[in-house]
Image 1 (cartoon, rainbow, N blue to C red):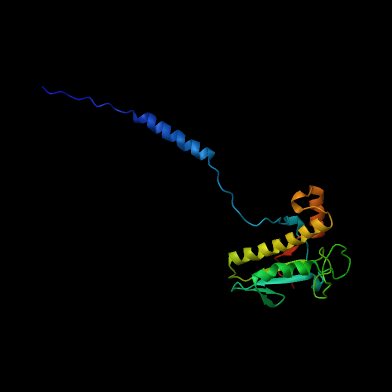
Image 2: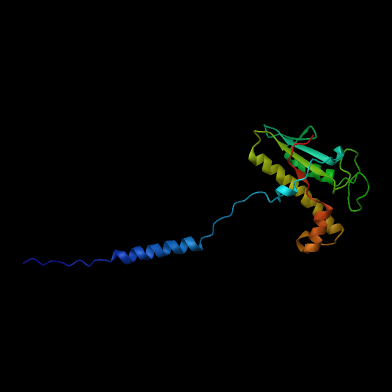
Length: 183
């Protein structure tokens, strides 16, 4: 006589339900990284100014050519030199009206931080990485100037500023960047 062995069966239906619930749990609880980019406030369409005249000495022209070389006012420079060049241009105090500026009053640099415009132009083959590096150096220059202003004038560290103080700092050194074609 033959004995038949009964093999117990596992109900696979409940396993599928558990796997589905785990999948939903991980989808709901997982964090999705946000896209990164450059934090800039763009003008709204109705806020775009009409062509304006800016005194030539108040414009710092930065060009990144197709070979990713950086030129500031027709002089070829390294990326490491850019932050200090931009900071000294902005903080120049050419007209003597800035009582918090530390500039040397160079005749070829800006009159006042509130009038200083950084013009950034790129070639058609400029790499995105070089563009971002230049933007980072510009941001570092403004941060350095704002930090100095905060310490010397407001007697506070940048990290400890109130909203009112932060507005004062941004008003003292407004970030004026133009990527438009200048004439």
